[in-house]
Image 1 (cartoon, rainbow, N blue to C red):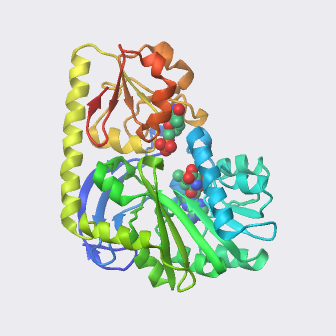
Image 2: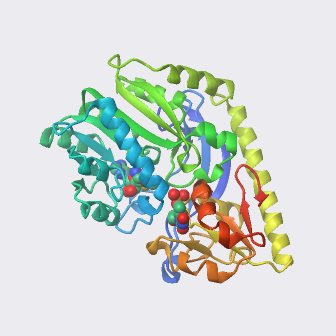
Image 3: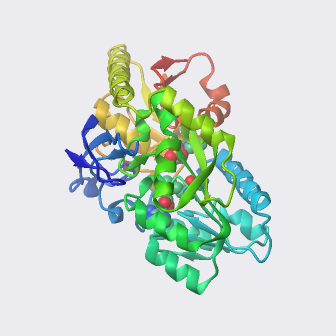
Length: 405
Ligand code: SAM
Ligand code: TMP
């Protein structure tokens, strides 16, 4: 039995992905000699409704000076964060006297908007290489991990925050109580904590199992977020679905009793209970669906190989590490992965060791089939490649099920 990271209750895993490497550890041949692996199992706590990894690598193994995920590789995400910033400015009536803190500010994709709008802000970003990019955009950044201690320092050295923001970061942090204690300290009386992460309801509905990897220690729902907020005298006051990262949820949290709880929260919690997110059965069905995708995709890739077709992949995503390693996809089935991120190029994918090549070489490679690992950016990517793909080349996607188009 394992103990819940939120409430200490005991629970069992509902899926075991086996040994997994660090999802973003795109490495040279030499680095692969000492590849780190951990056992990736996922469980559901029936007491507080939190879905979580049973084991997570140390944070320094995932977030460091060579972190491979740069937020600004997608134009869609750049405009998403412009809209996010605008919505916070209008919700909180932000001006030059306000203060915004972002946890996990990466290359500055969100805070660059507050800098250009002259709203004081501060980024917290422990991965130094991505933090450097944001500093070059004129953003002030503390290159440390956010927690209660750091929140105390910021409250003392700066001012209390009108808004604490975070995107695709909260679900990475196992020491969640320290985060909520920090938020409670740092938020001013009317302040809001707004964060978004891949949404459990979408993951279960779409079988997007590849959202599960080392960094994602939690998969959140309104049920689990309202539980933990309550534990810290905070309150979930709004939820807004997002289409980003294959289906995310934006949660707004305030000091308890200060803001009105939106009808959205009540409706979403009701829906989550209807689809069974508070019961173990939904998770067992999910595991069966994952294994069906596994069998279908491997069968397709084997058939294509036997027919002499050239199959390459598009987007060396962190998500693809779960797919390649759990399914057993090696360079024997998928020749290489094309990606626009310089730090990933001319390296090998974690665990499966598929070569990652610069996107510039994609079209010359003349593939018959392209396995889309970056399926969450499918609209942007398929639009960009429509002429190249034509009628004679095909996309392979696997969420919610295996499809050739
Ligand atoms: N917010 C960006 C976005 O949505 O594109 C970046 C998301 S990236 C997947 C996660 C980021 O969180 C990394 O840049 C990582 O260094 C940072 N991070 C991890 N733990 C953190 C912590 N305790 N405090 C602040 N940032 C953290
Ligand atoms: P993400 O799914 O974690 O956002 O990562 C997307 C990956 O896909 C990232 O490594 C960049 C890559 N990518 C491309 O190579 N071409 C593209 O057009 C887009 C949008 C992403």
